[in-house]
Image (cartoon, rainbow, N blue to C red; front, side, top):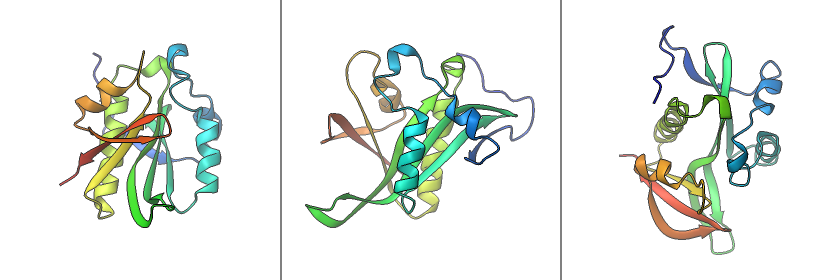
Length: 163
């Protein structure tokens, strides 16, 4: 596994998606065998536009290069039909460009997002994933997420304690 770029202090960071980095963010492509597991960035940005109070889209940037995309959600009503007061925060989407996978960018993004969620006063972070071939399940389990037994559509839901 390659180390993260450490050539410049604080070179790895999450940045808001802006007019300046929009094209680079939209150009992010996961590996072909992963394409059925995660929505394209442009769909995520459309969802962020629709869910402006809950979605938190960010470019993952190393130095001057956009290497991925993460979108978190905060205080999102989980299932209003069952319990309109049941709110959750977590990682909604993670896309690491195929050229940059295996370098620690995904781990960095999950940690940065969960730190932001913790800073916003939440003690658990949620994520969901598709199971099967090329699933990110081992990645999320390795970061400490534990399945809740719930499904979100056809995706397994997991939770990480942040305390």
